Structure formats: C-alpha cells, structure tokens
Length: 132
Image (tube, rainbow, N blue to C red; front, top):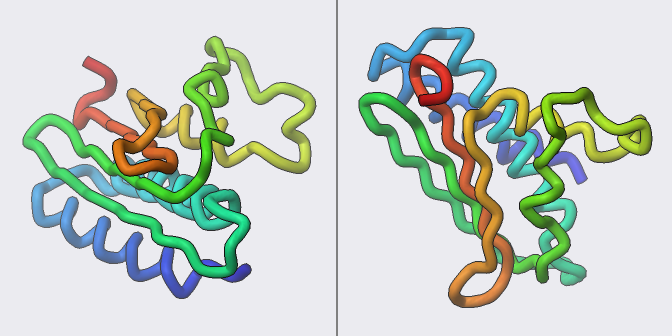
C-alpha cells in the first residue's frame, strides 16, 4: 500500500515541531527517515486484518526526541531485529528489512516491547548531540 498519504504529513509535522525547537536540519531528516520506516513497517506488518489500529506518540525533550508506535502485531518484531552489532545489514536484507537497519542507524536507542493491551510497541530515541 502507498503510505505517503500518512507519512508525508507526519514528516512535515515532525519537521516543523523540531525546527521550532532549534533542532538541526540534518538531525531532523535522519530522525524523520527513521520515523517513516517505523510507520511503514507497522502498517505493513501490524495485522492480517484489512483495518487495524496504530497509535503514535511524539515526545520532544530538550536533549532528545522519542517516537513511539504501537500496533496490533503479535510479536513479529523483536529487540534482536535491531541488533546489527555495528556491522552493515546482513546479506539476507538485500530486498527486505533495510528499514530496520536504517532505523538503528539514525537513532540512538530502539526499544521493542509487548504493549499492555496487546500488540507490539516500538520506541525510538535520538539525542540532540548523539547518544548520551
């Protein structure tokens, strides 16, 4: 499915919100790419149903930004999916899975958990000056 109808306004909102807080343009672009990949992944893999609920939350702190997405997925995504050990993407990611690698590259922390009301929650964090 074409998710540009959702990701474009989300990226614009993210960009304007972070510009207002004086975040660097390159920093904003990197975090925006990670957010877009995370949203795309959630919509593609969240549920077998045609309609499913996805919740997002953006929290802007002085020193970092956190983006959380929760979907109805049943544990398909795990913390290990984001552990690339400082290496490039594995060979099996030639056609699929590059988004997870990009998310791990452009953020300082990724946390995958089971949501309290079911589904999967992923929180990405990026510090203003790099990982702290």
